[in-house]
Length: 215
Image: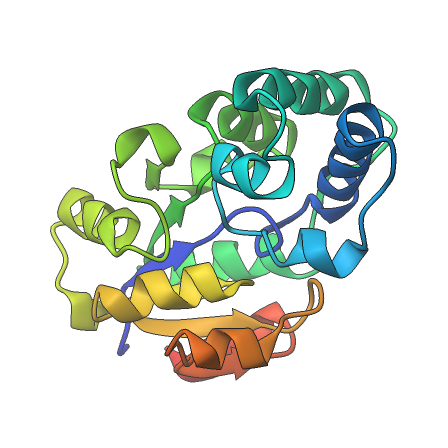
């Protein structure tokens, strides 16, 4: 086996949270700006921290007020937008563990929200290490999220691989010297923007089981 340590992004990679994220953003735009925004502009922020995105998209408003509104909407509409694992993800993670891999999650989500989703999706027992936004000072595409997981695993960069759905995931892995995988099952990815930032995934996969051919 070429890779023993498998690092996952959560949103848009492991779990389909796209609908609730888009809905929370549009509700926030309606409330603070009086109109919605194009979906592609929202998708371009996937992988950023919420406060960073708010400061760019709704700069006139108080960041903390917008964040509180966004999170309140997401919490109150939790049952409307069904968050679920993408097809094949659970089976892949189980197979990886059977092969002796260790599984990590590196996310820009808060520990509170991630842990809630992990319980609901019944994934807690399948994950070995987690790094959330509170665990790092520098967020993706800075390498700290990946290097923090490598430290927790006691792993070298060449033993690991990161799976993600955004240029921020790919950049984080690349900056940490870790091979990366861009998934093709989530949402539109602006490849021109990713290339302009100097980020290039090591691999691309169309479905979760394709990872087995890589590692």
